[in-house]
Length: 352
Image 1 (cartoon, helix red, strand yellow):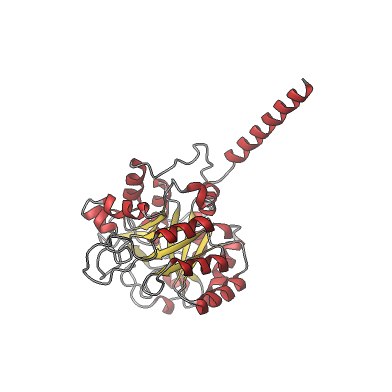
Image 2: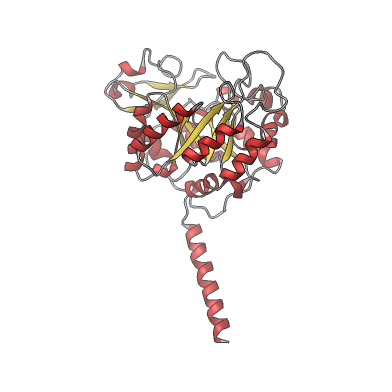
């Protein structure tokens, strides 16, 4: 009897401890668990919002790479926001896709020719409507503070590989290096070795995601080499569409059955890109099966569904809201815990 009571007491204690841990777990921590354990979450497709999720609804909702777009992506349930990093004239990391300010802000000229103080006088513009927002250009630190404990952040380094350690240092100073994903395009052994050197200089504790494109990588064997070199939790795979050819029927050499088997052995996610590229054919990174097909042509099954059928468990998209709604309606989303701790942004900025 005493053994039975001890067993019951231990079970109750463990249950209470588990409940307390879960209740205190941040949203980012739950997302990170799914990111780090791909094989446990093959029935759930994560969404990465491209340029923070600014492009949804025909580029009319938010300015790209804005804090407002991040807030919108968090609100709809995206797991990752992707943002682009450059430097100001005085060496500060800032969030901006283009090397010039003309397209996305009220200012003109090259980013690198503006000091941070000067960039703060620029206002972000919503591309689809031309509306000027109240939001200035953000620093990397401000962007990280906004995402901290709320969503994972994918830093697209528009600088040199040697700038990567400085970016990670900012995240580490904020206690959130583990919530940061950085990436690098790899296509041969030399690139693998160069990336290893740069990552070693950045220290540990963050997520590294290799990018493989099928213009240079033609089979899953190279992905195995990458897996052994870095043990990544996800690999971004690109199926180029160079012209007006018909939609890919197979997903190309990287979305093969062998690649899916390699991903399972390595316990990593297949990450597909469906977002648009300016002045490029629709679905340029997705064999024609991109967001244009899903939204403008109203064929989400032929776009997002196609990549899910080929093993993708992370999709980077310009239309995160539409993608999440379609995936959820078709059984590809597993709800997060209802008592998850919803962290408030650690930084408050004027956004519109």
